[in-house]
Amino acid sequence: MYIFVGSYNPVKINSVINASSETWPDVVVEGFDVPSNILEQPIGDKITKTGAINRAKAALEEGLKKYEVDGHQFANDKVLGVGLEGGVFDDDEGQMWSTVWAVVIDKTGFMQFSNGARFQVPSIVAEKIRSGEEMGPIIAKVVGEADIRKKQGMIGVATKGFIDRTEEYQGIVKLAIGLWYGREWMSDFLK
Image (cartoon, rainbow, N blue to C red; front, side, top):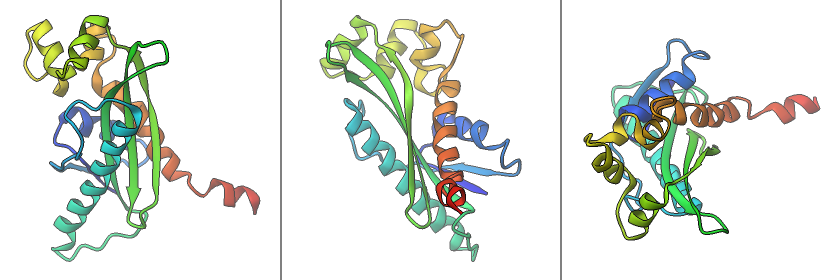
């Protein structure tokens, strides 16, 4: 199994490795630097989901291009593109929440989606995001640690290391991959 991830971010790559290696111990996971084609700080579920879709499609395309140039041919069920995108949204009460979307796509174009890890963004951070700043750099300034989004992320700071960003993303991507893996359950059930 080959899984191409739409990012070089080690958090995203490691979350995919952790989510898939139990089912496929010999899985090859490779990141590709592809654009999300959305704003750096996604605001709203629709935009965040779109970024994940764009990353998944582009990662699959880049991975296939890289390997098929060397003559490697993938079966439809032996290669996936994965896109992960973190963003924020305001609920009906005006409170800002963090959210993550995971998208899995195969060679046939079939996609599965997962969303989760929602937690309330502190109001001081939310105000800065609403004024145009991005969550990662805001938190990096607060804790004095560069490029925090490639490490523990805001969730690691907010939980004092109880859970980090890789763990946060791992469950979401495992669900998306699992939904793809079990995609034929209904037809199997009806037989």
